[in-house]
Amino acid sequence: MSADQSDTRLWSDTNPVVPKHVAIVMDGNGRWAKARGLPRAAGHKAGVASVRAAVEGCARAGVKALTLFAFSTENWQRPSSEVSLLMELFLRTLQREVERLHRNNIRLRLIGERERFSARLQGLIAEAEARTAENTGLNLVIAASYGGRWDVTQAARRLAEEVRRGTLRPEDITPERLDGCLATGGLPEPDLFIRTGGERRISNFLLWQLAYTELHFTEVLWPDFREPHLAEAFLDFAQRQRRFGRTPEQAEQLDRA
Image 1 (cartoon, rainbow, N blue to C red):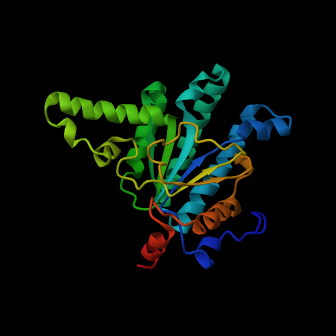
Image 2 (cartoon, rainbow, N blue to C red; image 1 turned 180 degrees about the vertical axis):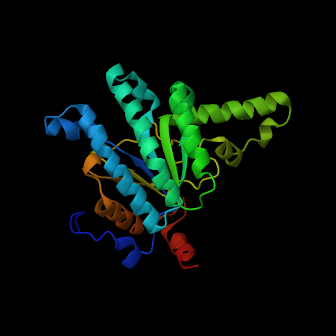
């Protein structure tokens, strides 16, 4: 079934398997604009509607967490004019959307090196997080100024500091303890990774967390991504057998349990 034909209610009607945590690389804004003879800025602006569609679709489906890769540590290398536009767009979107998120019981948090943002943007991020902190619905995580290698490095530094203070022994460092020090600490690992735009890379996104995540790639450019495409990804996810190192027979037994 193509995305154009699929029913956006697919996950609730015929597909009971809904991922708890969805992670999305929102790729293709620039190519979307170029194909229309528009500046790259137009693609970034058009992508905001797709963010809203993904958030609303995941919330309706009962997804617990949605992590969107908005701006990577490597993106700081882009032309300063584009970076400035992205920061301004981020600021305006925060101002416009935070009350909508709050009304819909969605909790917002940002992960990444927020110290690299302007003081004004840092303040708006903190206000938005505080405004939605008590909400109990979808956890919306925006990865901005974020990189997977940075994330693992900052977690390792936190553990090293505990060892230096004498509050942690090196032999007590476990994958679980390191996981708790990551920027996504407290959230379930992503079940489903979606990348739009036709590229088939992880691109330094949630490197530790994606160890056993199911990967779904689509040719759809991010500004065109809507709920039918999300439903298509969910259906693809539901058809996977997640074995986590077990044999197919063991996995089937666990599924039946």
